[in-house]
Image 1 (tube, one colour):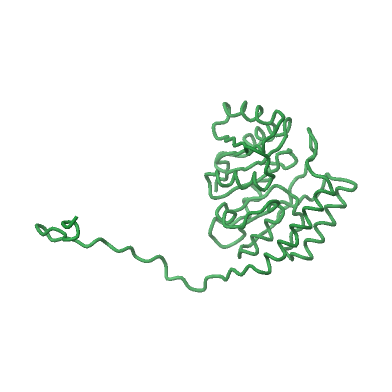
Image 2 (cartoon, helix red, strand yellow):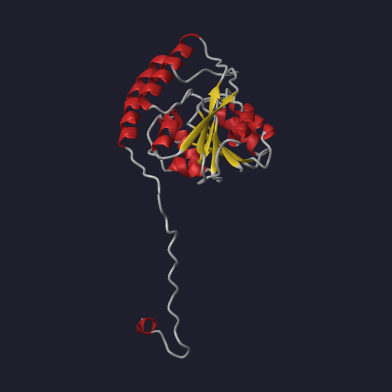
Length: 262
């Protein structure tokens, strides 16, 4: 199953070019269909790094937002543009390891089949420390109690999932933090696998603990409401697609009256 690797990025010069080069280097051709980078209107050298690689990698696609819209918007733009039924997502800061993608793919069901429609990464050895790690642990615990989605690491950016299933989800800012809960709400199975967690080599994080908490609490209660109000019953019986009607045949030499009247 070949995948579209979608990478949203904002001001990731020094990281994004290295990550894209690594993805093309470690993912075999029978897995990697394309890499789609969505630039959320960066004002550093992100665009230059990607444009320089496009001459080397013909399966690299670059899209740029006209104005900043956030990470969820970047994912949505990239997934709409993707050419393959499976997508793999990574953060643009280089902390996700593209070599983990084949292991996640090994546990996902074929699109439309029985089994997980999303496989998320679980960072077994977190690189974050201090207040950032405490905030992440607290947030994961709170949302797990409220959402009951059994997601141990919602902040991990590397995931694989069915493109069509994502496009059927309701879109809102920061939805990328709640993808497992949303997939479950719409009747899909999810799974998790351990993945590598690497240090950021350039630039700085775009999130602060306080800013993430404000947005997270607001969205969390919205998703709790959405989960409780979403009912997607499984199909118990399906007769299959109806047989299309064939056009009526006209005997030779006798014109069709409808056609003749025109």
